[in-house]
Every structure is written in structure tokens, then in C-alpha cells.
Image (cartoon, rainbow, N blue to C red; front, side, top):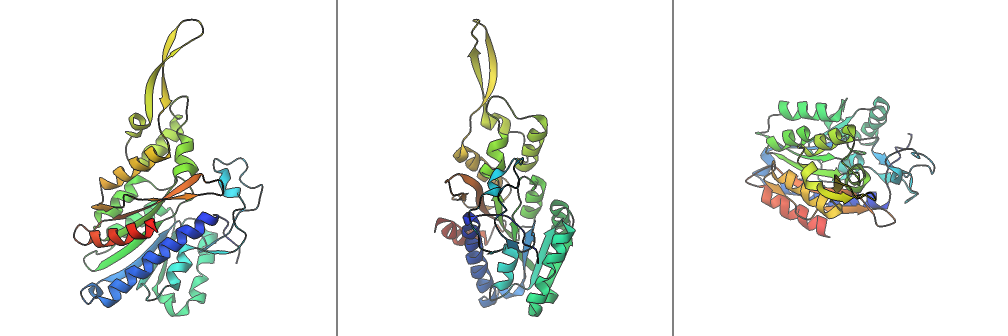
Length: 296
């Protein structure tokens, strides 16, 4: 099996926290008689091959995301798909969504490695936003509960998918928000981002209010005594993080106020690990557990 290259030491931290939550989640549903009424599902969108390793040095040189090329770790890392299949008690269903057909083929080998769970595994091929939206809308949430993990490379997640997940009122969402990996970099300093980047940011946040949130008008004096009004960046990692958490709170009933920054070897935040629960009645329990795991 080829190795799906992605991540660093922060990846281990992220996966450890996801693992801790999944173990607690399945134990609650297996031990609670009322909760056992539901079919539990783990969903990994942008699932990759289930493995993550550090990229070869020199790759991605022209990428907007040079951090992907940092040799933060040399060992093979378990991906979230494999971790979910590893835990006990197990989920009753597993759904892995991946656009790349070759990676889907490699993910399929997990059925051979976990033969006792092979019949529980479903693979959805195609755009994760569209396939997962369709899956959410077609699932009967009266007797299903799920944990969804959105783990994109960069800016692929669209807000309309997050809204669809929240509308189920039955999903606990973990999302890796590309804080420093992409968003902070796209928020250009001397002026607002070019239109293509601006559209991507709007799709991610679900609103163009980020323009007023992260930019301020400044009067600039020129060497010739003239003045002009410039829109300069007024945002740092904390401000961007707070804004995304506020956006999540517009659609989810319970959102963790302490998302975890995933940092590289130079202590620069690459991603923000965020949690939200859509169940208005029981979501506070999930929030308490997730907040504790994020704080650890």
C-alpha cells in the first residue's frame, strides 16, 4: 500500500484527541440502554488512505502550503479512518468519503485488515462536500447518531456542508480548520485578497462578513503629500479563530470555546481542531467531554 503523505507531529496530537473522543462516545452508546436504540456511525470525509506520513522534502515547493513538506516526523502514522476501526467498542457503521479513486481503492484494503467490520464499511467516491451533504439528507436521524470528522488538506470544506451537518441535530462534528495553513495566508496584508481567494474564504465562512471582520480602512499619506484610503489586514490567529467559532455557533447548539491549535515544529499554528454538537438536548454532554479532551 502506498503511503498517503501528510502531516507532522501535530498530526499525532490531533489523532490522539479524536481517538479519546471516539472511545468515550462508543462506550456511552454501548452501556446506556436508551442510547443503544440508535445506530452509531463514524464518518471520515477527505479520508485519504487511512495512513499519514511526512512528505518527501522538496515537494510542494510552489504550493500555498509549504508546511506540508516539513519533515516533522518519519514514522508511519495511523489515520483517523484506521483509528476509528481500531477502537472498541466499535461503531455500527463506518462511512469514508474520498474524491481520489486511487485512495478509495487503498482505503478498501482496510476491509481485509478488519474483516469482522468489513460489512459495516461504506465508501463514497466523489466530492466530499456533495456526497456528505447527500448522505446527511438521506439518513433517517430519528434512529441514527454519528460523529463526523472533516479533515481536509486546505480550504475544501464549504459552509453549506457544515450547515447541512448541523441541521441533522444528531451529529457531533470535529473539523480541522486551516487556520494558518491557508486562511491567514489568504488574508493578504496590504489589500483585500484577490477575487478567487475571496470567494474561497466566503465559501468556507458562509458569509462575506469576514471582509469587515478582518480589514480596516486606513488613510495613508504619500511622499507627495497626497492621501488615499487603503484596506489593511487587521487579523491575527486569535481573531480568526474566534470568528470561526462564532460562525459555528450560528448553526450548532453546542460549540467548544477552546479549539486546539495544531502547531508545527516552529510553533506556528497550522490548523485549529474544533468541535460542535448539533443535538440541542444532549449536546451539552458531548461538549463537556470534547472540551476536556481539547484542554488536555
